[in-house]
Amino acid sequence: MAETPIRLLHISDIHLGIKPTFFDGSFFDFQIEILRSLLQRASQQGLSYVLISGDLFDSNRESDYIVEKTLALFQGFSNLHFIIIPGGGSEYKEEVTGHDAYTEDSIYKRAIFLNAPSNIHLLTPENPKLTLGDITFYGGFFSLPKTNKSESSYHVAVVHGSVGKDDGFIKLHELDQAFYDYIALGHFHKCKRVSQKSAYAGVLIPFEFPSYFGELKGSYIVVELSRGAVRINEKHLDNSTQFIKRRVDALEELKTLLESCHERTFLHLILPKDFKETVNELLKAIPQARRSLKKIDYEDEPSVSLDFFDTLSVVVENFKKERNEEIIEKAEEFIVDILYRRRSLDTINDFIERVKDEA
Image (cartoon, rainbow, N blue to C red; front, side, top):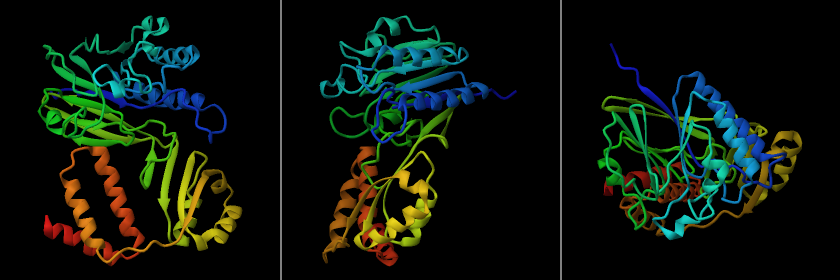
């Protein structure tokens, strides 16, 4: 008889209590409703554990009301165990004060949290390990957990921090070599698989534009554990917010993008200067786009020097050596954007082939 896999929900970087200026109404109430909807789905589908890998709250200054409402929501799903880590520990001082880090004034040290319902479990630098049934959970704060392996059947690390090669970063080879069956990463706001057994869940409810050209959608991961195997299923939320930062050079593409907007879509567009008049006409014809379009930058078409290919080749070669997933992601977006500015598919293809030949 085949073994039934253990299924876990991995979410991160929810930032409860943040107040985006563009959002109409209470963003916290919206966050709670999105969370409730996802937890209902997880409960109905038979998941047992919810991993929250840091930054559940936007800061340690959030009100008791926000904490109480959050804990009440979690308590209502008594068949789910919530495994939570703060968004920082005590290892690296430059990181310890961010968001809901485990500092002296940590939100997690309030009496209301210390007396939390029995299905809510907090991993801290002081108490970084917890066993529930056949699984032991280990907390890591800008590093992999430093506790010894238990005798459990399954081992899951819940970690907040960046993967990279610099000091203070989690090393990629450490993820590959660690004994954990799954490593639930938080801190990077885009859903991304990092290794065969580790992934960033991304931001569940986006609240800002990405720093790169691209799109941020609400994301989460469903993990399936069985003996000697892990399945990582990346998911996106259709009812969450969506932030798009994009350069658009074709009017038909712009029209299609504006028509696709819904009430939770937010746009930051970079457009040619000669689009100004057309944009005003499109916004009159597409009412929902006026609400979604939060920022427009108009610019002239930039010139590119004759050593364009040589410069980009060097950039690509340097980033082949880079192990910081967040930096790689931004570099890729930057390179593609520069190529796109040339508005020539042949140019892009020629450059890709050249890099392949040199690799």
